Length: 153
Length: 461
Image (cartoon, rainbow over the protein chains, first blue to last red):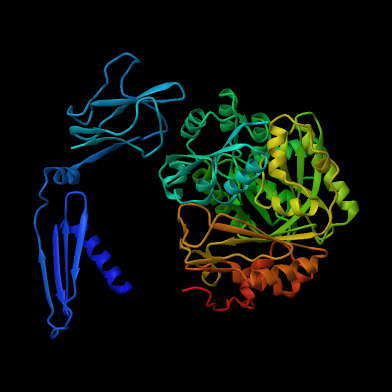
């Protein structure tokens, strides 16, 4: 395969990702390419017949919605990011229960964590509504501006 | 000596400070905005913390976030670089109250010299000649007119909280004084949040000559000679050289002693610069003091054989002035050209964007202080300085010819830069003769005689 072809295939993969396609098939000048997206892995199968057939250009793009519930949700996750620099705490006190856990429903005003900066405990609000899907930041560890704290679906 | 330093800046000066720290065996913590995630200084620092969105007001000026990062990073000291919070007395105070050493002067001395109008009063008290002008803040247009009549036109209206050439207006006669007065106040309010202005006589076509002083925390203060920064465009320095072609050893002694005297009178510590205007008769007048390391500290380093940033760190750590600094004497001649991401053919319009290809000159006597590299994207949110090129020569003409040679090998593509402008300056007869003043660039640009075409290259792709 030529370098040019590799570049084109990469461009096709990017297009598939962007438009959420699972299968892409193309046949051109005796060259056929089919790309199929598996939940986590992308496989490419390309075949080139030994004898070049008369040129016939065919493009087939099949559009299917992603098959696994996981990937649908991953599209809809929002992130709660840190608005400041400080230390991330999941609860209001060392022995206290965490403000939120995976599965907890939050609204915009729900306090989700504390970020301590310069000895000041700042309550951080969700500023979005949904259900906590993942606790990304680590309790007691420093976080920087823009760092992902939680994912919400 | 400190174990860890936070660099509260970006770009080339952040890299400069990181280099000094690394050579001193000090660990470095870089703070950066979202626009600077790919910046070289962030990559080279031992640790880095994102402190905010791209605008400076959301990141590099956020004292609380910087102090948070300092706390998390457990740093001993903060180097503020230049610009941003470098001359912010409140920031220096906050550092002190958090038991983190601010690498620079104390908050009170910063405050004393930071108010440009109060600094003039200090200078007068210390016996330095100052440019004729108002004795303090000028509140009304009527007062401005009275003062201008006394000292004679042309005059400058300058912001008391100003710096970097902003918040300044010129008036050549009484009719233009009114609008100059109001627009200076307006710009000062917008840029510094303080509309106080004072009036100063405008000295026609002076040389801008500044003196580097270094002071430790044990009362030792020395000056490291002068830098001639007269080549300016819109009050921004563009080319600097050390020593000044105008200087005589007698004048250097007089001005140097005046600079040290002023620094002593305010109990100054660490590195600082005292700016003077020198007229055609070699009379000198104090204008202001900069209580920070400056962009052009490099040429003093080359001529006086020292590392000023390392010295700043040593002084802040409590050491006495290094002997080689305390007894430094000038040798050789150095020139610096500031390379900006600007288009000299379009009135220096900013030219941010991705640098497609970058090759910096080398060879004997060439120094490059730059944070950019091939593939780096110059962000639009900050100043346009992308590199400083410094050449050293045995004589002034050697340094100039070396600069001309080096600029001919300086390839930066993908964005417009001022490299061709500087190359044209190095060929300019008046510059080569040392025959220039602060009005030089304007005259040369309006004469339209500068050849700004750069040679096409074929080194990549």
